[in-house]
Image (tube, rainbow, N blue to C red; front, side, top):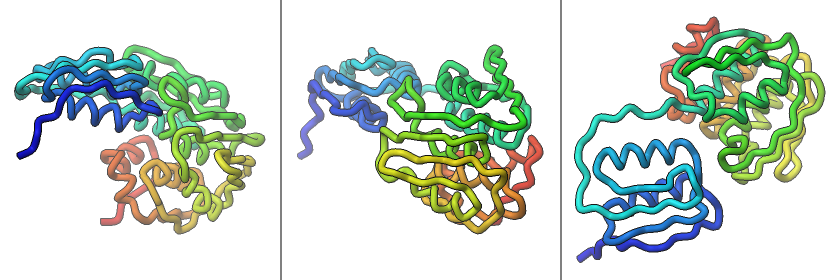
Length: 270
């Protein structure tokens, strides 16, 4: 016989999004109260809290570093609209910036991607924010950046590889420091096949801007690294073929259709 889950005080050594979400999910039907300290603060956790509470859960504190879950007996069926994907929004802003384009993204919560917008402005993109919309106008040449990934509300680790790809053709030398995940520079060797000049030293990637990239056959090793290769293919001279696209499709719905709608020459081979 399996014992029921009991409420407990849980302190996270690191404010992990996955750990925070899984503890919340495990605790909503638990006996008693669960308290999470040093919880992750990402918008997705607030959205999860709102969704669960609509179902009858009793979760409070999402968006802060302390979350409390009072267990309930059952949850009810509901209809719920999830928040816009902030990483997809950030990715498309980078796609547009890298290709020297201009576009308006709709259904975007700009406050969720403030660090991304700040860095794009630092790279000399012009950004205009309206209600649920972000307009971007790219410069003729992007300016090099220094970036450090941090837990929310810092610069998101999921945007690190996409910015690195964009910065391969920037003016000057950029430095990215990855403070969240180890082994998140697997995409670098693939970008270097396309003419990028990136070296990795521990947590840091040093990106020396070059005039252009060249099409090549490359392989995605993870979701965001794969998106970085797609971006590189958009700006490269010639044809780029990205293998293992199942990684990419896991995180970007109808990516090829959306990119074609703004002028990209891209297709997915079935």
